[in-house]
Image (cartoon, rainbow, N blue to C red; front, side, top):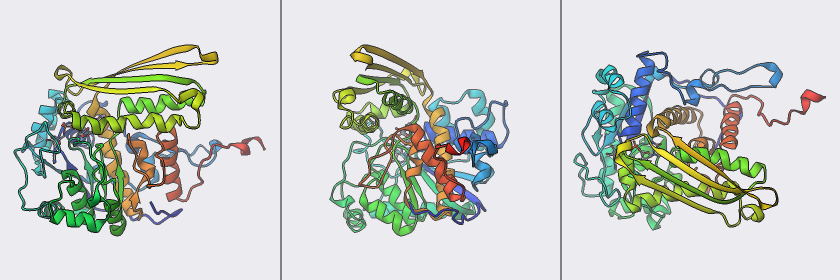
Length: 443
Ligand SMILES: NC(=O)c1ccc[n+]([C@@H]2O[C@H](COP(=O)([O-])OP(=O)(O)OC[C@H]3O[C@@H](n4cnc5c(N)ncnc54)[C@H](O)[C@@H]3O)[C@@H](O)[C@H]2O)c1
């Protein structure tokens, strides 16, 4: 990720374009939320709650120094006033219509925001129904080859930048989960990928065409779904060649967020795990897409990884060698975006005596995801102005399956991820890293 202590960070001057492939529940909730905050609409509760860049502070120096600035005052982030949203979808609904369809925000909130949401209209998407079997897009680009489709996306980006007088852009994938895919020959190098674009290689998914077009256009790219998209050598090579930051995969919002908080606790206390059964009901379009077994497989693989990595059964066989881990998602329309996630956790303690933990998280998927999209947009823009390129592991904090260098296992523990993120910011600003050793207080 190439960074230097106290590096020069270019100022956040001018407007920042935030390009969102997929103007669905998550994307419209972030657009509406940013609009509500910057226009001061509604009640005092309309604050960017859940956003580390807007609400979080960072401790600097010793505990006795009492230096705890807001992150937004510590590093030069773009202002919310300077953000311009754009994006693509495979349906022509504008952001107001899509938000009304998603049913996340109340009618009253949407009525207030309507004049600001209606002008946000998607550009036609790149779509292939074999990658998302539950949707039949009606607003899609046509092209003779995947190369042509990438060129059309690049033309969209250039027009969006020009028409809105933007200084910089970032892109965050907020579109549907595609069918499960492992890297194939066309993903192995940039040359092979570009050949695949020319030859319409069936292994190049729409999400990878967006990632390619954005990177070629000089736009950093974050992947909010578990899709392969850019987690392969060709795209890492392109990001480095273009000097751009990339990160992914799959926003860490509800059940996995809780998992990556609780599993480190079990491990910290050397409590054993017999099994972890996770199930969910949700009824939004994401839930409908995940009702297809092939898209679910992509999500399942993403959700299953965290426990293995955190608990390290190979190092702690007495505690974690044989645990069962099951993840289910059931599409249940009455719940809409208001997901309910249950976890039953069978653990064991002193002399092997069994115990159970139950979690019932009545969450709102897009309310949890929206601040992540905002933070990623602002941090990815910071990274590009700081000259950071390639995989941004310090942003693992936001992902279920963090992208890492090929030889590294991902760090899933939320608090290690947070420490890594904050130390990265300290490092960028030339501040002391905080190790929590604390010996100096007792000298
Ligand atoms: N909300 C969460 O908590 C959460 C957490 C992790 C990951 N995600 C992922 O974020 C993504 C968005 O979630 P959502 O709830 O907004 O879903 P959604 O179904 O409401 O929105 C996705 C949008 O993407 C559009 N789309 C599909 N394929 C497209 C393509 N090729 N090009 C352009 N647009 C396309 C769909 O028409 C839809 O409008 C999903 O992949 C989901 O799995 C969400």
